[in-house]
Length: 257
Ligand SMILES: NC(=O)c1ccc[n+]([C@@H]2O[C@H](COP(=O)([O-])OP(=O)(O)OC[C@H]3O[C@@H](n4cnc5c(N)ncnc54)[C@H](O)[C@@H]3O)[C@@H](O)[C@H]2O)c1
Image (cartoon, rainbow, N blue to C red):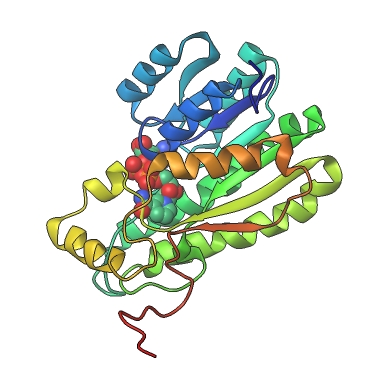
């Protein structure tokens, strides 16, 4: 049976759990070889072992340039090349401008913004070498509209949108497509581990959108799969919202004629 990513090699960051894990599973199921990377070594190694010879685990803290070089080298040395980079790793935190401590602000920017930049920079040569590369940067709906109490996070995710478009212009002529995915609220450990008051707020939010539930990681993986595959051969510099209609427009409970 042929897969939609047959013969391709992917590197996914933050792939030990959540959306990155779902993407790793889906990519392997569709014929890709996958370098699973994260800073959570145990679940990352377990996932790679479960997926077998088509996967391996490599520790990669996306804020560290040396880690990036090593991870790209693993893809090229073990699987011969690198076709797909998914910049998925990310963190978030709530807080007002003066309430969020500066250390957390810098961590968010370091991981969500610098991590994506360093990844595209480190993988560029290998992706260009294939002549048919794809980068998928995971932003957020918070990279399209502002959100109360998440100024740092939204700032980092807006930056991902801008970096995606700029890199698409640089890399398009070199055969590499660059697109961003903008999930709404997704039922991953990031959300599952949120404090009860945040969960309650998210539940209320879900009730106010056209599809009244959180998205599931496998639904994001489906979109990432499409963008990674040759089916998306004419798509670059574009942003893809996947949010149950959250950003579609103001919600109304009833509309009586
Ligand atoms: N869950 C949501 O509602 C939601 C919504 C929109 C966007 N996103 C984005 O989707 C992406 C995936 O998030 P998720 O929901 O799967 O969250 P998650 O917390 O379940 O998974 C994120 C992964 O990133 C890893 N990570 C954290 N810091 C890292 C670092 N310095 N280097 C490498 N890996 C690191 C974590 O170990 C974790 O495995 C993130 O970029 C997040 O901002 C999530």
